[in-house]
Length: 512
Image (cartoon, rainbow, N blue to C red; front, side, top):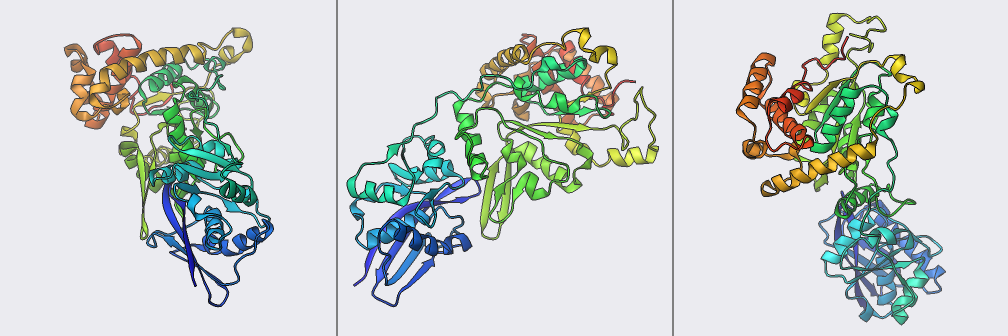
């Protein structure tokens, strides 16, 4: 006579969790374990881990035919997170635990051969999937408990091993409820302070505008002029992560396996700086199974692309759509994964292959043709999508010398001005459904910017003279709106437009 039971687990698909109903049937046929329902290798191998873990927990694995079905069968199952629900399903079908305790309970975890529970990727996404499928409680490995506990309206229980889970199902107690992190995930200190940067006052101002309005920024200058140093200080100028943003970013980093052994929630805005040799899948996401790329790991934070012209041309062109849609869609024959990618772009580039063109300190060895080829590696449409273009010239020693005094305003002071400007933006842009000036939709641009006639006339002359595209002109208006917000101005006047125009110089090279 056959015995059957059902247990609820979940698997990852990109950064989303998919609930999986684990059906276990024990029948009086020749001993064998069959795992069906489109399992990948790690799931098929769970039979050996489950058998050893059940034996280590002091129970007898059924010496009969065990059939494990993972529903829905149309979804490919990957990862080892189904070990625990399969083991409990086998024990329930064998009568070792009461099946009445399983409804409303979700299970997540990889089993070691001695019965220990190992952490899995994407615990938060998996817990969200269990909650949305009707679970009120979930048992997860202790190492994943803090991350999974971020799920609202789900009681998360932390377990160290299979024995503890079995005792809980037998007695209804014995597992600790995981505690939710504090409501604020704001960092206490700013790691990289803007006051440490000497000189580069124009670039510092551009950083402030970029932080206040959510604008993209291109820094162009010779080697050693401070481009990377400036870029690393942008996260410290941005408003601290609120709890919802922290949960969004945590879910992505958890799905990428970057939280294992670390804090269960991100407390600082991500700063990602991939090497220019990064592949398309590494930057945008992909692989098998699909995993988030650097643009998604930078979600709610900063993506820094140093040596921008050295990136593969196809990768940079694919980045254009990401900057517009704030997401990456990875299409596969077996389905589509969508990765969030709402980040702030900062890019850095040398003015020429050798780096010294237009420098007052060293002679450039590049021909005009090589400079033109180097500049052509970054397309005009991509440059159009970067709001602020800033030259970063080499700084004279008299400005770098520590005896010359402070480098300028501290990041905390600039962040205070940024947060004031963003508060004005939120009040003004709430009716348009966006939060920063960089996100203003084209249809609402005139109403949201509120530029004076003089400002529009100045912009019109600049568009004709500099031969700017319509997209560049619209982005100029958004940057001018941010400059006016920082000044506390209700309308955008000519000075704000003039400042924004100063960050759209065609060559973007440092001053001579």
